[in-house]
Image (cartoon, rainbow, N blue to C red; front, top):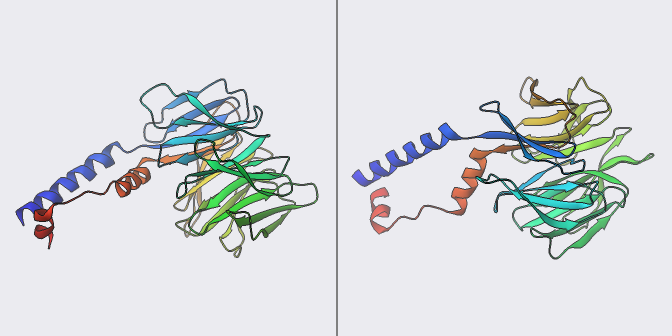
Length: 300
């Protein structure tokens, strides 16, 4: 029993120590640069500069700790290790034709991306190998994955056909998820914990949502900006979205609240929330604590 109390005490101290230093950071892009905003301290730093491209989105490989992003104007996809105690450096993943959206499947270690004008959706391994075409559709823009249910969602931006479609991750069962009519969907994100999909309307700034089966479509929030609404990232009923030169935090509960948490001098494109607590839990799940026979008897 004494051993059991000691284990619990050590675990409590460990959790307290971790929580004191946990970091919640927003990774976002302006033209040619990727920045980091520490929500705990308010500090802003430049992670990467001189990227010579619009960067519309990010996604995170939590298994290997890499952030992936497409450079639409340079026709490639890059990654960099995050977090890092050293100077951030990019690695080439693959070339692509005006890549605009990217998403990571951590269960099977795959990268998915779409090409804006060719309407092609590709898959490859994390290092860019074994690349192949999943499907081809009308011109695309935004991309997200429902990992739990094995769906890929993407927005179609066409002069006559603006919709959100979904398909299986192997390219089968393609169907229109919802018809957004005249809306220009520039950002998509899944909140898997809550079972909702969110999207941003570029022109009006409407933040929309529905259930992951396409029902209960509604307006969640309307921003005060027009023709500059782009990236979003949903996380535990909180949506971070880039609107012009601002990042807004929209909390969805019985009453929806929205606050501007960061303002830049330039227009913001992609936005991604890095929650250290979430990734610490994932690491602990991948490396479970092992107990010997004595410890197991004490816990019985």
